[in-house]
View 1 (tube, one colour):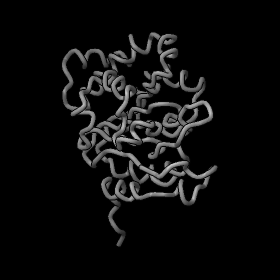
View 2: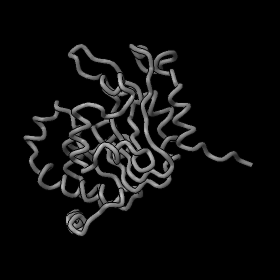
View 3: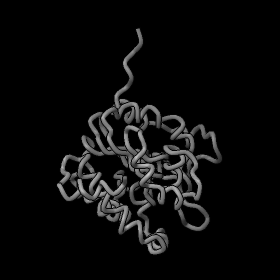
View 4: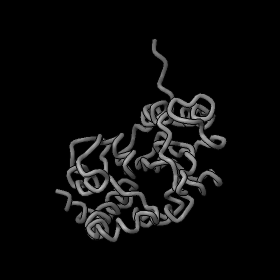
Amino acid sequence: MSLPAPTFDETAARLRACRICRDSPLYGPPLPQEPRPIVQGSATARLCIASQAPGTRANRSGKPFSDPSGVRLRSWLGLDEAAFYDPARVAIVPMGSCFPGLDAKGGDRPPRRECAERWRGELFAGLPDLALILVIGQYAQAWHLGRMPGGLTGTVRGWRTILGAERRPRVLPLPHPSWRNNGWLKREPWFESELLPVLKAEVARVMGGAQARGDAVSLRID
């Protein structure tokens, strides 16, 4: 008789004790600081934010998106902090659960590959009620959608096709909300004018607060 699959909470507890990238790295040098895995969710979560990796502020606070990127992301989603940080409704599952350290230019290093390979499958197996996954940045997009033509811009430009595909849970690609992407946002005005209204409507529907106006907007993906 097979054992029941671990719950999200059980997997997350083991993940929070993980030290693979520090003590037994498989790719490159060890993590340059003590691991502090950060993940949020529960078996009842309907919305998942598949992000990149915690930044410096999240690493200090132990709270995902506790920085200006989080303020912008919550604005994009139309969620206040109480809803955003409610693990019963919102899962936050980064590609790398620990802050990966800074590169020579002061930017964040890529997420540690060990993390996704070891934990991502189990974490998502513990999220059976997901209706929508928001894949933020190139690493999450490659994991959930495969490599698509045109890199991140090409992937996000194809959001209508991706969101409308016959898959469950549904998937919607987004750029990272970091200030480093301000130039990208200015070059791609369609993101704010076309994608964001649909994003807000889809999030409201998944979170249980969709209004008639949101329902009408979401039809634009067809």
